Length: 104
Image 1 (tube, rainbow, N blue to C red):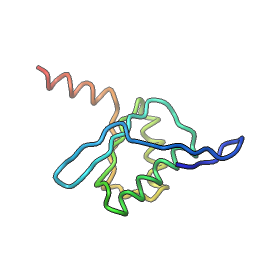
Image 2 (cartoon, rainbow, N blue to C red; image 1 turned 30 degrees about the horizontal axis):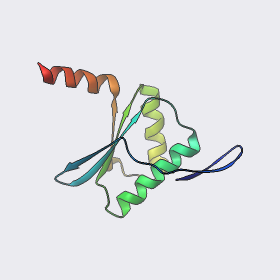
Image 3 (cartoon, rainbow, N blue to C red; image 1 turned 30 degrees about the vertical axis):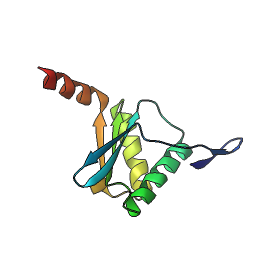
Image 4 (cartoon, one colour; image 1 turned 90 degrees about the vertical axis):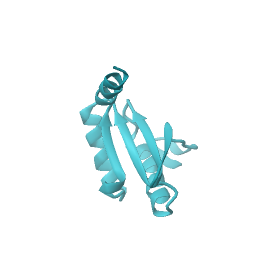
């Protein structure tokens, strides 16, 4: 990844938090608990857009710590050109509740 900050260009590698193999292909999962800088988030989503275009992945799931954060990531995802059918946004509280119900 490469993005511009107030002090210059930043370069970093990026790996998703989790990778799932499903019948349709690979789905990457990002857990977004804190707000990333706009430019870094845009760079990550641009990376995923290119992976989708190259059929390296089938989709992206974002698990977010708040509704506001999920809405922000969804806006950036749309701006990055990621198709709606290839994205999913979940709240961490909902994922945790589902996991607890599944243990019973």
